[in-house]
Image 1 (cartoon, rainbow, N blue to C red):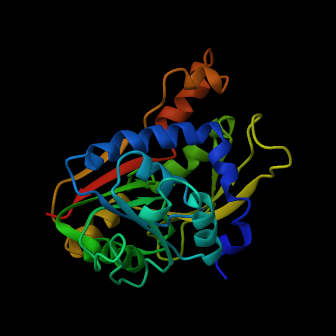
Image 2: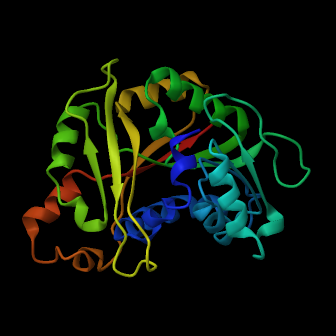
Length: 278
């Protein structure tokens, strides 16, 4: 059983935090140019979870979507989320492991592989070392058509993960409803750090909604770049900083607190990776 089988029914609490406004704004800004109506827009959504972004991607322009997650409980939740919606017939959800590269079906009966876009809204951060990261990029490369692109929400790109971890641990990100707590020492390989994601529901969350926490990894930027290239993803690679929606700073109570606000901008909890196959 994955850690997500146990928390599947609670996981969506993270979508009810102020943090998600930054995450969603950043991701949408970066991915929608690849979902224009003139494109075919067959999308593979890796680590689809309970289908939050699967639904969004279809709403933002995807023609068809295949969602994959290692947790069957998450996959079941994604299917329920889209059930009865106008997008239900354009989505397929499959239990699968991104660490075991394979072809996934495109759309409804359209063969395998050859996706126009592969997304990973928090996918690569579950790699605990370079070998696992390479396997994930192999999965991405295998399923992208030559002209395709990967768009993923990732950890902040840095090779000095130690300094970044110290900055995050002392930051004011908890004001957003989501905070990362990094381990005091790097993982055994020395390739990065493990950390816990701690999410607490916002004031507007559903009654009875409880917080949740789970584990993840922050590996060095150079490992991402080296393993992506080794997997055959040779096109343009771009790291985009997270984008804060207008008025968001005031919403979390940091409008007049410049010192604490700088701890968010100097140690952002996410970025978006845009990576073309060729």
